[in-house]
Length: 250
Image 1 (cartoon, helix red, strand yellow):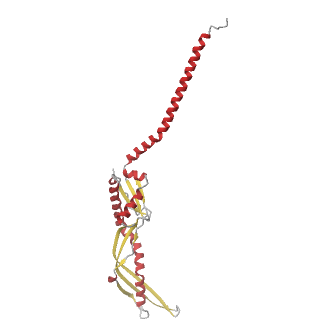
Image 2 (cartoon, one colour):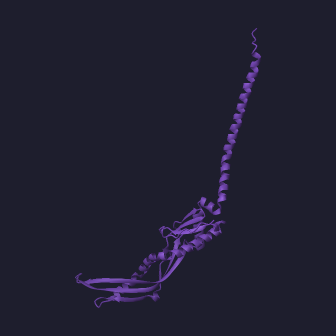
Image 3 (tube, one colour):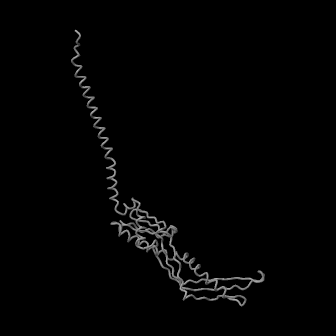
């Protein structure tokens, strides 16, 4: 006989193999579709997580992450002030300007006595920071470090009615009025140069003014703005000249 006694057992074995193969195929398809669904949802999940993280940071921190703080501050400043300049300090003091003039005669062979003249006058100078110059805001925990432009003086105002001229040293061989006239012509330029030097005298006053302005903007623009300390530095200020950092708010 040609039939083998083991032939009836071959069909079940083949069925088991086909069933196992079918299970593997179905499992693979399920895994593949699951992978595709996960990949499709990943950007949305990541975006939602990012939004939750940003929301946890608070309004001011979110503005820093969006890199809009400086731009919004400058826009606010120019709209409030009506110009690109924020006046931050005024210095009123009596300035003394001196001029010493030396001359010679006979083609330099004879030195003539020097003439020294002096002008004393009240001078008022206002200082400002320019919104159109670079500003930098940095967030460090609950502290906002603001680097403001350098202090710039407006043209000093000299009270012409109060100017007093005097000749400190004169000579019968010299025309002192010529030297006095020279000093008068130099007063405006000299006062402007003195104003640059005097910027250090008003730096702390200006720092307080800018800090107050920035803090008011924080309170107006951000619900959590009052929770942050504000520290002001100037771009031309050495780190040693800046005030110590205020303790961080908790």
